[in-house]
Length: 261
Ligand code: ADP
Ligand code: MG
Image 1: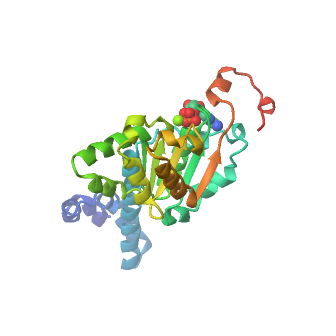
Image 2: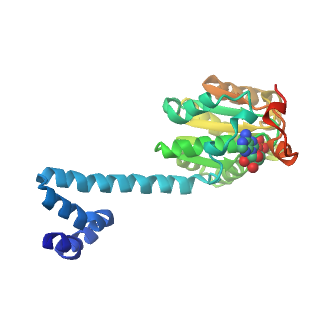
Image 3: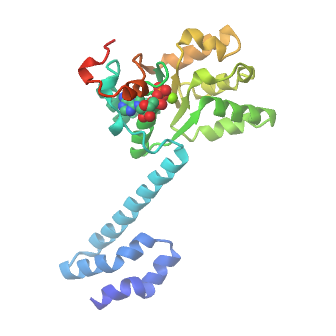
């Protein structure tokens, strides 16, 4: 037991601090004590020690990814009421959250529907689930990102800025329809879509169907080319229901009374 006490306080403790292994430092006493009392072979002790360190690093990594993602912390799949959107199957969304090979293929998810139907909530929930699974996600309002990319183009560093976004397995562009006409003129959004095509995934929410995307891209040819690339490998979630906010406000609405599509 004396060995156990000295594990974290003596020379070993100093070495673990120097090596920046706080988790092992914290657990060393207990693990050594357990190893001594149960007569573990050396390899078992080492494995136990490094398993803890690896698990802790993984947790910290996921925490970092969540912090950088800019996702709303409370918009999770667990708090999404799928019954409110009969056109979207929970199984399909769960499959996107759990089987991530679509991210490896650079496939996309497109969510359409009027305001208030839960597009942002659902896509955030998907983002959180992917972070839990070890992926990197960035949530951004589409018009903010366009602004950032335009500034980068002015400073002749658009390629570098696009490369930064490459780190993310999934880039969420919320509210594509709110990109302003004058923003469209620099076509940075098109370049982003072309750059990520078949390479890195995008999730896009929009209030307007493809037919109205001419507002977002300058020329019809560019709109067509953008839509073509986005749709080529994509899951489209149509959410044409009544606003969840409005329904929540008219409380007391029984699920059975909800309008079916
Ligand atoms: P949209 O992005 O389509 O405009 P939001 O995702 O912002 O809609 O949803 C509006 C509000 O209603 C949010 O507070 C959201 O959490 C909530 N909400 C919408 N749909 C659902 C749902 N099916 N289950 C739970 N909350 C929902
Ligand atoms: Mg929204």
